[in-house]
Length: 299
Image (cartoon, rainbow, N blue to C red; front, side, top):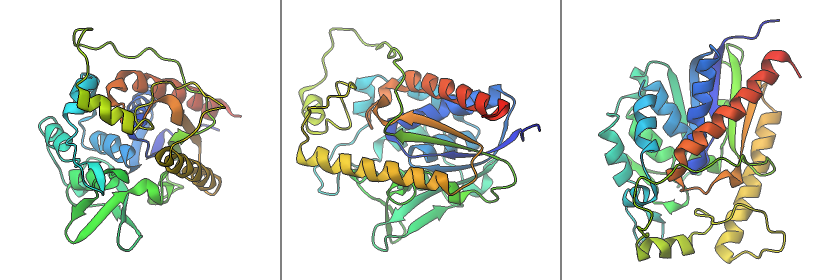
């Protein structure tokens, strides 16, 4: 029986790994699929929102031309106890590339989630400013300061619902394709990193190296697994959250009818390694091609 060629696309949280969502979308379109609806969380909200706004090529061109120093220059660091990045500077830069729109005016149905800090409940954005919704959805706890909208403060939707299948309006209307960029056990793909546009002799500023040292989980130097490694208190908290989130993702996928699953290894890159965009997009494309082959030709 022929598979539906329209897709409801679910894009997970995952920080910089979420740039693989771009490759997912490109491969779906290359195969002749029409994306009828997108439900995104955190990085999935960012990429999904850019696509729904009809501006994914512009976003891709912008993000793929950022090197490590460019990425750090867009991080408005702060010493707040609520997070070490304000999270406003990068969106101001992005708005110059892709102007803000209202969600209800986008070309396809789009929704994303965040968590209200005070009530602890999931909040779903289906209207209003696209960037306000994306900023709220991507407020990674301890990294980005919580986003403020009206009288509410929001943190990353991945805290409660990292793979937001539940946001899909009608799970039977289209084939459901889910992208999970938080897989713990999947092997990462050894892709070459995009060469820097800057001279090779240019070193990162000392304050950047200092932050890298403090946030090793977000800027890993070695992706190889070390069974003998020890964890700092912060790394242990992050590791525990990763394990809980990975298990929750599995439970979500087991309880919803999903036509195709695309998994990107958590160790593919660090949370804030956005300078590896081109590599991650290619990883997304490769993983999607394999998943669609399986969906189209059966198990």
